[in-house]
Image 1 (cartoon, rainbow, N blue to C red):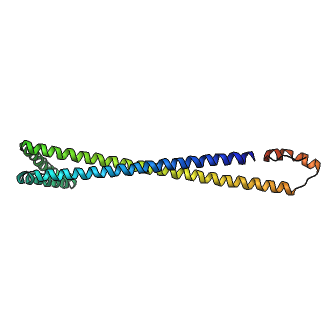
Image 2: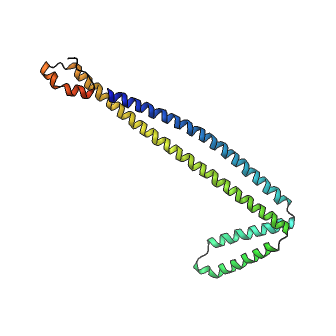
Image 3: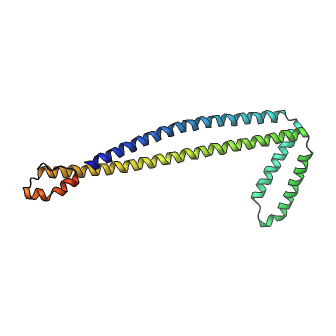
Length: 200
């Protein structure tokens, strides 16, 4: 009976810990959801600011920027398709990239400042996305820990049920068995092990 009480207390304590952990996780997930919403709002604000700055660029500057972006995209696509046979093409692309860099240096100071701001905003957006992904993986890790705790709790309940069944079976056997005084004296160790006090 002592083992039964100890196991029950341990299981109750484990259950309280699980409930407390679940409440903490719920609060942390709520905080994560709020942070994600704030992050999305920041991203939308960044996109609006980028759009506003693009609209403020002159037609000539906007056309030049589009040409640069198109050329950069073409360079990236061609670099992905390169092989050892395309070494000469790589040199040509490097030359083109150098010419683009020279053209960027020749852009007006206002245009260069605007482009720098756009790159900074892009970097901030990427950092925000990385932070959001890290929160997402952290949430998945917490969920996995909860599942492991639930699994351990379930195993504990199964062991508890088995122990209770063994105790009930032993008690039932002892109640139905009426031994002689000599046999009862021999069974004293069994009574002490099971927690049952010999009425004799």
